Image (tube, rainbow, N blue to C red; front, side, top):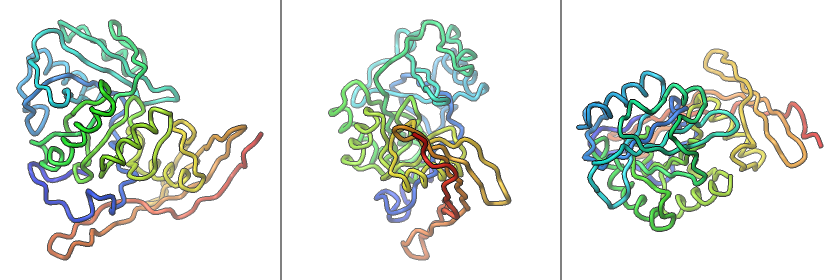
Length: 304
């Protein structure tokens, strides 16, 4: 779900929350490599002017299925001399984690350990969440026009926890917010919506309003999770998970586990592809792929 590079001509409603945004988190982001780099940032990572060893690190990460992101502190454009500052993280499994490290030689960062769910040597686990706001102007002007003010606002409210970042996927949903280590995606963020989502995450919860989904999970599964949360009102980050799924043509059948105090329930959720047509006139209408709920049934009630 990619916006127009270097432009900001999305249909009305896409930046206001009027369009459906659930089930749109980046599917390929299960492991993360965040590299501090003040910029400038070209439209694509492979076009950025980076040290040779840093470029090789990004290439290694990409080959291993690790998602690389460039990050920088809001409002500060310090030089990039000195050791390379990175975060690495895993959004998979029941206990996602994020770790931080500094490297004189990027070759010393063990990315193979990362993809096996192990904290690389010389990296230290961090307990505070990290919030990424896409401000990648060269990729899409909306990300800077809407994302930059949001990043500055969040940095004032949550000092030390907020970073500007390169393209996270879904430019049409700017301003985009990513909560790590769980990889929770939010879109069409206002300041009020963003601080509500960030504070909820700090307390182990999601906010369904403008929640795009959890990265690294297939979009139909993201949709199934969303519908179960909407049905049950369960907002704990770790309480709802898709245990299995199967495709039947365009239809996807998911078994979703929902933990509640004292027990757990399982739901059968059937989702189907759907299309949302932005209501902005024929000349600029854009269709957005989404999912609709075809069936949601309780398989096992909560056991105490």
